[in-house]
Image (cartoon, rainbow, N blue to C red; front, side):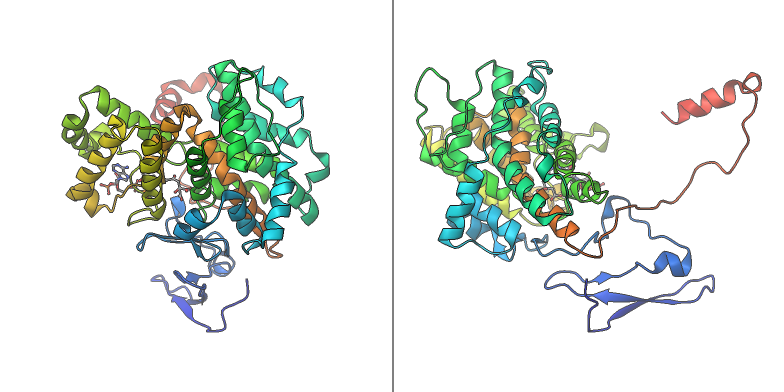
Length: 450
Ligand code: SDX
């Protein structure tokens, strides 16, 4: 990163009389400045302390910008609202990977490249047989994506830009095929091969829902909705799974292994698993009485001892409405209208819960607004996607973001293997004692650590 010519600095002083230290401040194009602490340990033998990285910029990046207070999301400077309504997912992939929107000829070539990589090696289907039929699709996807590193020896070297580009095309192209295979395996239906005459999202829908018994009819409204789900989930700055991919790739491992690490991280309910959890929450409220039960549920959320969270609400960065949630809510209306489900009780419940939460001081004071996951589950359920597959579709969409962020890190001549330090609060140095003399002390201490 080029040092900021403004020479702004922060001066760190110590109450114990240690010498003060000037730290350079760098400004980005937009957004918060950063205090460059790279020389801190070398000059003060002290670390910074920031578990959860609430105040830490792990890198500089030109891919995605989020303004949490304004509720703004830009991919390469373009507002998500414009991309989601004027572009398709592969156009967005091109933008994230190469930094500019494609010309029509560039898009034609990129679409063709991706289309002609959508098949997977026939051997991949035998991995699935090792799973139980009721395996969670994210367990299957973590395995399948990692297994891709056993099939493409010509695109494993992260430090070769051409190999990075080939693996990027393969991953973007094959994720829909693998997700559809993971789904078909759980429902005991035959796998459906990709078709080269269909768009990316239409191909995915057909691989998911077609059967050999009849021709699959593409529904343009549902395809558009799926394509928008892909766009809205494509990238999101240094979120947990993207940071996982960057840290994993910083060891020089292959791109498939790094993306598999991202898949595993995304699975968590605090992250990509939230849409599955949000739908589970709505189903639970519905079972317990629907809209009439919202007050009781909200009360349980406010009760710290309940550990109940309003899934699909809140965000580490957005302290305003997640712009993706607004777009997803519109898509919800379009899909339910198309399917004649305008009176879908779950959607009505979601709208009622959102309204009540947005007026409740507990959520307002904590700036807890609906995030992208709140409505994406309802859209996917209406389209016919099983709840357990929601996060796999999120992983499909986020693959391009993970790759773009990985490529940006690897292409940075200053990048090093990520290796954070710690504040050690364990035992001082001590000696092993003979086992006969150890007794209860150790057992009690072990229990304390559970
Ligand atoms: C995604 O990082 C990304 O960009 C992620 C993502 C992406 O595209 O990659 O945007 C995708 O992961 C969206 C987030 C999906 N997760 C959920 O919807 C799960 C529910 N949300 C929360 O678990 C929570 O809001 C987080 C994890 C999303 C953010 O948590 P933070 O920033 O660590 O905030 P926090 O847990 O410290 O909460 C602050 C306060 C706490 O109350 P107090 O201790 O101050 O009294 O808000 C409360 C929390 O208890 N709180 C909630 C809540 N979220 C936070 N209370 C009830 N319900 C919630 N959902």
